[in-house]
Amino acid sequence: MSKLFDVSASCAIVTGAASGLGWRFAEVLALAGARVIVGARRLHRLQELGLRLERSGAKVEVIQLDVTSNSSVTACFAYCKKMNIYADILINNAGIAIAKPTIEQSEADWDSVIDTNLKGAWLMSREFVRQKRDGASASIVNISSILGAKGAKQLASYCASKAGLTNLTRSLAIEFAPLNVRVNAVAPGYIETDMNRGFLRSSAGDNIKKAIPMREFGQAEDLDGAILYLCSHASRYVTGSVLTIDGGHTAGI
Ligand code: NAD
Image (cartoon, rainbow, N blue to C red; front, side, top):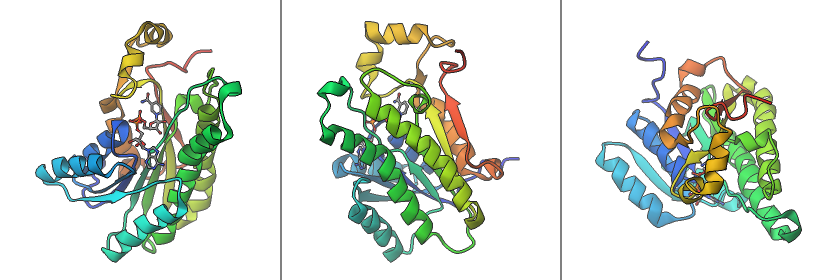
């Protein structure tokens, strides 16, 4: 049984690893023994993460990556190939939200949210599968959101992008199954990170918390089990699934 969640022979790419959940996913996979490739735009943050993980004995590659840019994505995989590194886990975590009323949003606002959250995951997944070793099994985990299944005021582009990501997950799962690549999504509810802690601890956050049956926000560690499950042999027969982690927030009507 101890082998069920084993990822120690794997190599994982985590996008948007410079902060928040992506940082935590990289840590979890590295501490579980996987080689980790951390990608994001802020190189200094990635280097800080890389040093920290290396000190704990992990094998880490740090790559500057903009998931909205096809040339940046292909350069990332070209670098891995040059270094003879073939990833078998991809965590599409990079994401942004622009919270404003729709009538105040620009076309550029819309494009940047859709390009990061949806097109970015598609570009990364396409290149990941193109570069996969023949016959090897692989796992893609898309970090969607409960807002991929629900609407929210001032977050139309974010909700649309995450709904798209959830259904991209299902479509790629069907297409990639014969290639031995599983594709699943995690749909977190409100998870405290450095970026949203101030808001979640405000009175507006208190109102959200009242709607959560477990009456608390999630912590990044609450996603550890889902990541290890979806990346390992434990989920061998699971593809096209969306795993909701939200303290029961979306369970009711
Ligand atoms: P975060 O802002 O700390 O992390 C997002 C990361 O993505 C950042 O490091 C950012 O630099 C990176 N990024 C943004 N654009 C990028 C690009 N073009 N190329 C590469 N990297 C880019 O926020 P987070 O809360 O850690 O969110 C991580 C993911 O989890 C996002 O996809 C978010 O939508 C999703 N999510 C978060 C929550 C939550 O409550 N925290 C809930 C549901 C879903």
